[in-house]
Image (cartoon, rainbow, N blue to C red; front, side, top):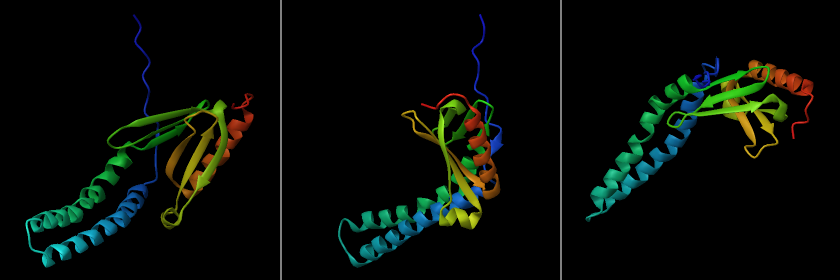
Length: 168
């Protein structure tokens, strides 16, 4: 009896700047939660009744919840997020609770895009999106250094253009 083939891990990591970028995005959401914590704490300080301890608890939770996400999640994501382009496919692995492997055959590629929002621009990062005709739609290679992302786009366009099939 032969053993079944195993999926190997993609060989390339995202940019070392990715954890700082993810931390900045989480911090922006954290600021909103911390502002909400202040509002709830002010309400708790001005009210008296059976719900006052619940308000203090809510304020504490709103204050504390972003901290593990700021400290732990970016490092976990960086260890897990990987990508690779071979002669036949794009393979991306991501997640931190649920791990996802997405593999797109290059013969199915229809378009290749790259995006860079203001925060990504600040960190010198870019996301490359590979779109297909399938119902799955697309796969993203997130948090690549800007210059590498441009090389990846050029490489994918060249490989996809050389593929004789019509990607439908």
